[in-house]
Image (cartoon, rainbow, N blue to C red; front, side, top):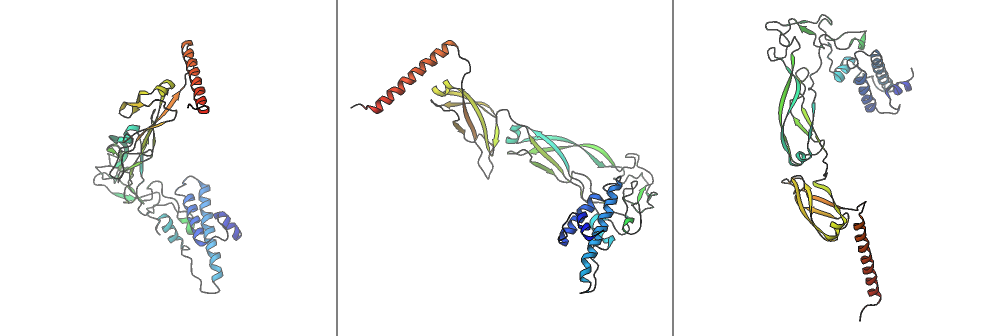
Length: 351
């Protein structure tokens, strides 16, 4: 295989710097590592190819310097150190480095009003906890561990020579190298049991769709004594039939007839608290905006409350009775006479 083919396999340019080559190698090695693809022989073969290509590129880049100075082994040419840094595998292959637990996610649907004003609620989250009688060990009282018979206590299934001896984790002991001699009767040796836990939440005012509340330490258990993950509650705000939120303002539309818009008067407008009245001036035009100060998102020490923004939509009737049509035609004649008289006065002003 030629050197350009090496770069093509890694997906980088032959002119790529060492940092880019290393970064790409690490990504591919993690993607195709047998631990992540235990039942995929093609992934294992691709993993071996990526490792071989990476070492070949290291040697090729080191060769031009050999004439000028004594050859230094590249930093990651030591296969055991390479595997330890990238995958947490020690030289003996008996254990993995500690790692934090996974973050759990809980999706919570809240009402539009609750997002504005805040609320108190309780959620129930199914989770897995350490068994209390055996303290998560999976051991029956007075018993202990014994070497795993599948991997002879190594924690991994070893393959061929060299780097290939670092096989995938042993399926029976999960890389620990030991198994429970006598299982705990409460958890059947699993060391954990399912449980539903309740959490009291305070949804703050001014919450928005997609906001997250974090409960520290209530996620998945850490691996090999790593810190537990967190529980993240993701808020989903239900849409409202009348309102939309724009920043801290609450927007809505109110429909009025052309008669109401022309004559003015008192109309009812919706709010999150119910209905209240608004005085509509005579001759209100379609699209006119009214603001109710302080009726939007509640304020905070850093900013004042938002407003409720009301847009007037003037509606036109689709069907008219004969009497309504007669009245409108009369109004139309009067409007025309008024316009004609106004135009005449502009042309022939009195006096």
